[in-house]
Length: 136
Image (cartoon, rainbow, N blue to C red; front, top):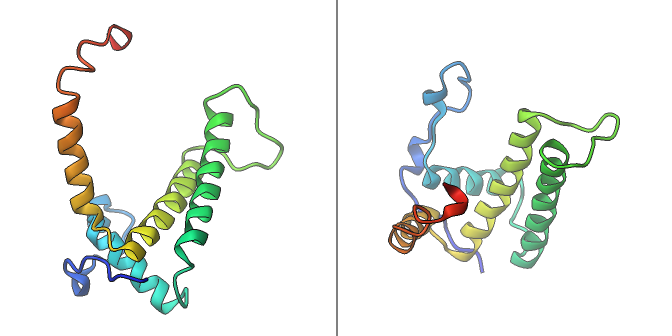
């Protein structure tokens, strides 16, 4: 079942064309959910099923993992393979897009979920990482 994304200022989305000023194209998580929903409805026709989007998410994470293993791990790039920060950004953007699709489809407000997750981690890990000798 398709759920509407959170509507936090849906009619006041920031312009995405000015790339010279990074703060001019800053968007909130709620804005991103609205942007994706609008794109799906105007360009993408409709959301893929939740199961399909879960599989697509795994595919996109795999593409990011492949790039990470070649950029920071022991594997080498094949001739012509994309690489560098821009390529990493492209893959991370793909992962984020599909994750936002799934959130929109299932009625998850990612802003609230992220805030709740950060609170959980802050309480749970208040001393955990500070006392970890491996991180010292």
